[in-house]
Amino acid sequence: MRVEQFVSDTPDLVRMLLQRFQQPKCYLVAHSWGTVFGTLVVARNPQLFHAYVSIGQVADFPESQQVRYQFALDAARRDQNEKAFATLRRIGRSPYPSFNLSDLLEKRVSHYADLAYPDISPWRMTWWALGSPAYSWIDLIKIPLGVRYLCNRVAANPPALRRKINIKQA
Image 1 (cartoon, rainbow, N blue to C red):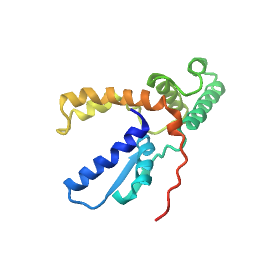
Image 2: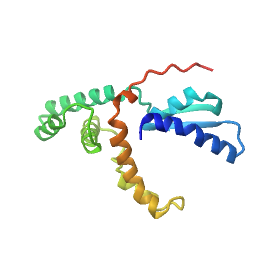
Image 3: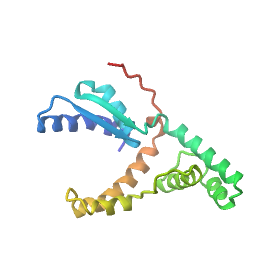
Image 4: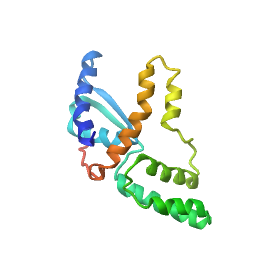
């Protein structure tokens, strides 16, 4: 899977939903990774959408990871946390070839930034989904595997995540 595949598939899905619910347009809300795709989809297909809401927009993912890495490395050095410092030096700067290395960076950043949200793993999301009638057992197995697959494949393609997009104001 590549960013371009998600972007090219999304308008077909939107058209299907618009037809099913007999609506002329819809609202697209995207968060974090979804903003990589959402911004491109709306820019290329504005006729399908009333509005686009972006939450936690990813603008330049590779640069963002570089800044986050330096933040965590400096914080570990300042706190004299030798274990964290060694871990960060071991994984080095992005791009990371796997979800696991990216996840190590995120754990260090979360620790030092004192972020107010909990660490939500794909397994925890799966557990929460158990209470929903919208998912089958097969879906519950595929969700965490899909998240890991997506992170490994998309993050391995940094040029696709470094796009400057000009969107006309309505």
